Image (cartoon, rainbow, N blue to C red; front, side, top):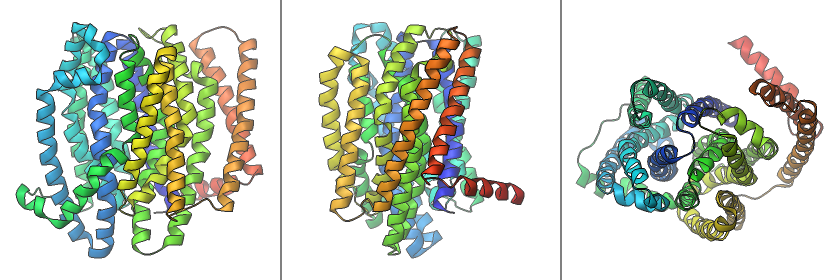
Amino acid sequence: MSFIKSIATFGGFTMVSRITGFLRDMVIASFLGAGMVSDAFLVAFKLPNLFRSLFAEGAFTSAFVPLFSSKLVASGRDKSVEFAAKAISLLTFFLILFTIIFELCMPLVVKVLAPGFMENPEKVALTIDLCRITFPFLLFISIVSFQAGILNSFERFAAPAAAPIILNIGMIIAGLASIAFLDMPVYGMAWSITITGMIEVIWLKYFLNKDSVRIKPDLQIISLLKDTEIRTLFKRIAPGVVGAGIYQINMVVDTILVSLVSGGAVSWLYYANRLQQLPLGVIGAAISVALLPLLSKKLKAGETKEASNVQDKAIIYGLLMSLPAAVLFVCLADSIIELLFEHGRFTASDTYKTALALKAYAVGLPCYVMVKALMPNFFARGDTKTPVKYSLVVFITNLILNLALMKPFGHIGIATATSAAAFVSLYQYVHGLKKREYWSFSPELKKKIWDIVLCTAVMGIFVYATQYLLNILYPEHNIWLLMFKLGIIGIIGLATFLAGAKIRNILDISTIIRNLILRRKKA
């Protein structure tokens, strides 16, 4: 499977996942609003997802996939699957212990994660209850991430990318059902998180079985701890907990500090971040997931030039989609949030405050996508220590800026600090790869980047002008008119960018259309 096709496959299903995720968030916003219950639920939702990102999708994937891919090339399918069985057995054992400890210590965890809640005992009690319900999701979703790593190494990207759709649909159904049958619908939504995690495990197990991959648990924990390959894996996981989790570490700092700002601030940042996650998840994650096994295999085979070419493509594809997305968020934040979330208990004031946070987040969006594209270059070489050093610098930068900006600017200052930390992170990765001669900007790549920046700037001017004109012509406020305006703006923005990309020879649009037509004929 080609690199672009791998990105398209993973990105396409991730796009569906993000769309159902927005429907889920619309349900949450409508039923819970942006207050005590919403803040408590979102902290409970974030808690297992934080450790999921650090231990499973971040550290585990970055350490496991290169080793598994290399073993697949060197020793064959059976040996690589045997190695995978040992790895997941030990990981599951430690995650069960970790989950039990956190369940027992949840009051302390909530105090650390959301210190601003302590002034409201009712809010604290609700948050503790919800966190205890949702935290086992970590165990199931970590197993899912492991299953996905194997499937991705076999170039099976569709099923893992589709798995999060199960969570979103489950939460939507639970939300609608809970309103009808429960006095506190938030409890039904919390239980749906853990239950859908179990369903996702079953979903990916089915696709592993289809590929004749059967993972047999190994219960000899002591002997596993002595296994050389497993020890190598967990040595790489340890620094990867920090190295692969830059974004998630910054998010938890944001959560802790924003809980001190004001009631509703947790929710405003959550919804703004959810919108930013659309391009970051669809583009950044797709590139990272597709790139890691491909780079690992090419470097293992000694194909360094081909690996560098793949890295260049990852940068171009990432910037091509993330930079226009960032500009659109800055220009259209208020309208997008009003359309998606301003229903039920989510007010116009919530829309305004969430939009300000989204604009601040959007500035750093292209940087985070670029980091997602560059980070696999280290992990594919088995280097998990360098990202740790980078992450510590970024973490300290984010913390200092948060503390400096949160008092004068509130939740907007926290979002701004996150974006500023993204620029620091990008600089480190570019400089570090160049210094080690792993990769550097070629003249052709530099030209492509400047062309993308130029096309995006022109698109931004057209989008802003169109929005300004439509607001003068149609000053009324209603959902259908808002959809009409955003539709017109979107069409003009897309047409402008594609025209610029064609003129600057960034995209060969005729070839893309021809390939799509040929693919449909074959189907």
